[in-house]
Amino acid sequence: MELIVPLIASILAIIAAIIFALWVLKQDPGNPTMREISEAVRMGGAAFLKREFTYIFPIAVVLAIIIYLALPFAGEATGLAGKISGFSWSDSWKIAVDFLIGAGLSALAGYLGMAVTTRSASRAAEAAKKGIGSCLTVSFRAGAVMGMCVAGLALLGVTGLYIAFGAHPDVVPLIVGLGFGASLISMFIRVGGGIYTKAADLGADLVGKVEAGIPEDDPRNPAVIADNVGDNVGDCAGMGSDVFESYIVIAIAAMLLGYFTFHGSYLWSNAVIFPLLLCAAGIFGSIIGALCVHSGWKGEPMRALNLAFYVTVVVAAILSYIFAGWMFGFGTPLANALLICSILGFIVVVLLEKIADYYTSYKYPPVRSISEASQTGAPTNFLTGLSVGLKSTFPSMIVLVAAIIISFILGYASAPANIDKTMAGIYATAITTTGMLSLSGIIMSIDSFGPVSDNANGIVEMANLGEVREVTDILDAIGNTTKATTKGFA
Image (cartoon, rainbow, N blue to C red; front, side):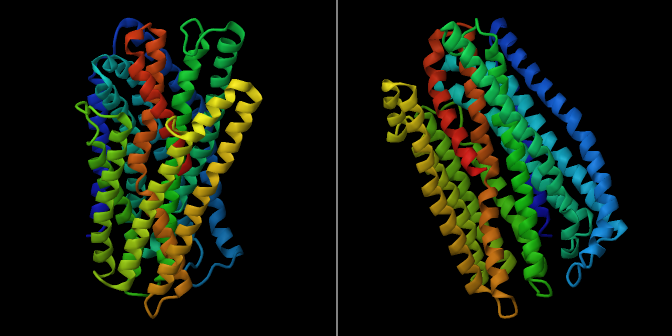
């Protein structure tokens, strides 16, 4: 009964992604020049993923075979006993299949999301002619396709395999392969995409600004296309695969900790399922939050994105209260503690978002100080930027350490009489982390908005649409901030 909720949530996320994609693709792609530029970026992104997958999937198949052959012997060699007695041949093939499914779902999420974002930039640029609200909506909904694909496919993979293997706590160790498969794709796409992004970005700037003395995104610079492709493969596909992997790994880790902590207790099954319900709460909130960004928005764009984010947090918090009470009993110390841990995870994301916004937005002193340092030359600009970056890590570190300590204390203090208190504290920290990752749907939507708005700004420049450059410049600057926020989140 309980597993229907995350199953419905994951399916709704995929449906939402399809609806957003169809809506975006119905928008006007602009004049022939804009369509030509957009098509070049799309082809570049597709070529990158094709080349990556050509090398990754054969490796994945080989690793899956190794996992299948090695696990039975590994279980005997390490002397696994007690709650996990080792893996049989029938278990090892399931984990090997998990591995391939995790790799496939991660690749699919990245491919589907980037397939839409690379087709959306010209549509966002054309929408800018109608005003900032229309451009914002096209860019955000294109990004929401990636966000919903990441959250929906990740939760569907974990929940689907848990149900397929018997929907019993004893099968939790059999779905760990899902996380390993997702990690393989994440490693290649995130690192490879990041290198491609920076190489293309620096190459375009060097040949354009330094050698030729022409502005950024100038149509005379062919490297601009590679730069725009890099925005998508790094900040969209790369970040998506990274968050997808984190989402799955954290969900499975929390389920495993529930498996170990409450083994033999009447709460055993509920403790394993609760992380899935928490992920479902985040998806429901993300879908509702994403609908808050619409073409009728007249205010500051960042406020619309913040509204979507805060609505997501509120909805997820309300649902977390319901799910915690459902699983552990309304008003019980354990239910209250895990509810607070869930909300603490949401608060951590909010604080990290605020910290990243403060250190990366043009509205606040850190970025302004870097800009002012440029007046005395490149060395002072570099040193000021480096110092600001180093300082920005301290408040984030304080927030994360405080969250870990608080959640552990809450879990330790609320453990039922027959449950190990230390393990309960560790389980509570996993619930806090799951609360953070449950917001991946809206976080990735806001992140993927960045490369779309960036590419739209480039298309406006290359297509000589100077009359809307003011609109796309604003959204491009906001997109740089949102991308920095998601990097901190990931």
